Every structure is written in structure tokens, then in C-alpha cells.
Amino acid sequence: MKKRLLGFTLAEVLITLGIIGVVAAMTMPVLITNIRNTELQSRFKKTTAELQNALQKVQFDEGQTLYGNYTGPSIPKILVKQFKEPAIRNDQYEILFQSKLKGRDLIYKNYDNSDFNTRLIDDGTIIVNDNFFIFINNDEHSKTNYQLYIDTNGYKRPNKEGYDLFKFCLKPNDRLDYTCDEYTQRTFTEKDYFKNLPR
Image 1 (cartoon, rainbow, N blue to C red):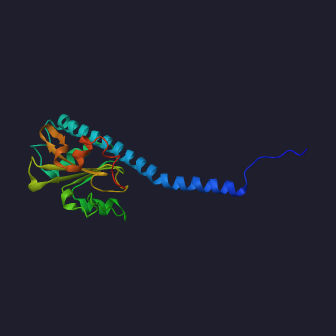
Image 2 (cartoon, helix red, strand yellow; image 1 turned 45 degrees about the horizontal axis):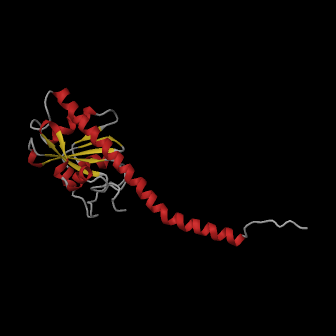
Image 3 (cartoon, helix red, strand yellow; image 1 turned 90 degrees about the vertical axis):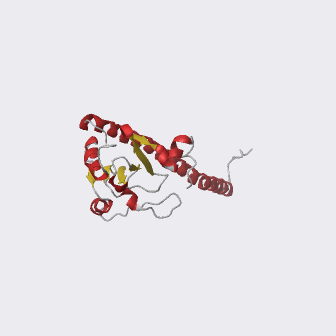
């Protein structure tokens, strides 16, 4: 009596592979988005903590706070000293990125994808490293009206407000105030803010 060998036909194998491919194609974008959003959240927490620590070190090193004692153009000169090499500073956004980017475009967008007004970040810049930039805005060179923008992943995209570009105001004792910007505030008040970012 002949033994009958059990197995799958070529057609069955191809159909199964096709189904697996369709399921993978449907789930991959979601997985990629989740990984990206988790990375954005992690970098936001890390860079925010680094900036707050640097501001506290300024008080120790300079004997006074930035708030109430310095105008915007002075801030990069003082703050850059609180970061390790290769941190560099420049006093104007345009000059910095013409020299540092070497042909790479760094275009920021608002949350709704409209063009970001770079005049909001034109009073000085610190490149902490390729993954962390700090921009200073100081309206009318006041000693009490500062905004600090952080780009939490540097040259990498999306370079977009509410994703990797966040605004803080500087308050007495050099505390970072997240309530002066809708998207920055939401990162602190909405538990799943980064998980719910649109693609």
C-alpha cells in the first residue's frame, strides 16, 4: 500500500503569503507611526530636562538668573557654556543655518503645515548637538519677556510645531513655563498627546 504524503499545494502557499503580505502592509504604517511618536516623546522629555538643568546651572555659575538680568542676544553666550562640546551658538538664525547646514534645508512648519515664522526664533540659537537645538526669542529686548523654542530632534524631520518644535516661556528663577503655548501645554496635560499625533 502506498503512503500518502500530506502537504500544501503551491497555490495554497501563495495565497497564504499574499494574505500575510496584505496584513503586514496594513499594520506597518501604524507600527512605524507608533515608533516615531514614542521616539518624539522620549526626546521631548530628555531635551526639556537638559534645558531646565542648564538654566539652573546658569544661576550657580553666573550668580544670577537669566530672567530679569539679560536681554535675548546675551542668552546664547551664557547658556551655551552649560552644555558639553560640540555645542555651538550663533546670534542669528539665518547666519547659523547658512554656515552649519552646509546645503541642507531646515524648514520649520506650524502644526497645520503652514510656514513657520522664523522671526519668532531670531534672537540667538544654540546647537547642543545634531539632535537638539535651542532658539531664543526676546521681544523688544526686554529682560523679562523671553521665549525659548526647542527642536527635540535637530536636523531630522518633521521639524514641525507640536511634533519636535516646542515653545517655552522663561519665568522668574529661570523656570520653564509650558503654559504659554498650546502644543507644549498639551504635552504636559494630555497623557496620550504623542500617541495621538496625526501622521
